[in-house]
Amino acid sequence: MRGRLDPLRAVPGVIASTLVGPDGLPVELIGEGGDALAAELASLRVGLDRTGRRLGAGNVTRIAFTSERVEVVAVTSGDFILGVALTRGHDTRAAQQHLARLALELTDLPRAEQA
Image 1 (cartoon, one colour):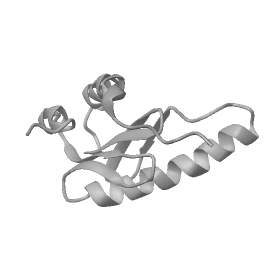
Image 2 (cartoon, rainbow, N blue to C red; image 1 turned 135 degrees about the vertical axis):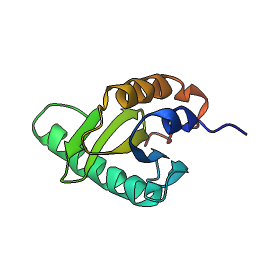
Image 3 (cartoon, one colour; image 1 turned 180 degrees about the horizontal axis):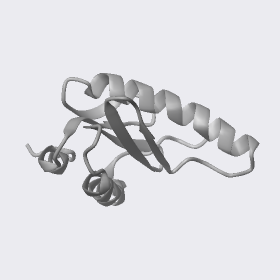
Image 4 (tube, rainbow, N blue to C red; image 1 turned 90 degrees about the vertical axis):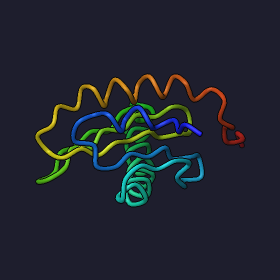
């Protein structure tokens, strides 16, 4: 069975990728660091959404940061997060385009129930 994240395997520099569900758990992973990426993106989203609400800016729809060794880009689609970690120095545009396309295709996944 073909995974949703498979197109990201062809992007140069990809170390790990993940699709994180509304419960903060990974739905799909690529790479050895996929579990860690999923957990950290879920945690970042909670804090950044809280910051966005406190500032009146709304929910976070995109996260990007660079560390000494890695570039991370993530997008949200409803309650889901799609993220990718690339070796620093690689162009992130192709990964960002794939993430945006994948986010639009998540219409068949169950959404969290609204309280």
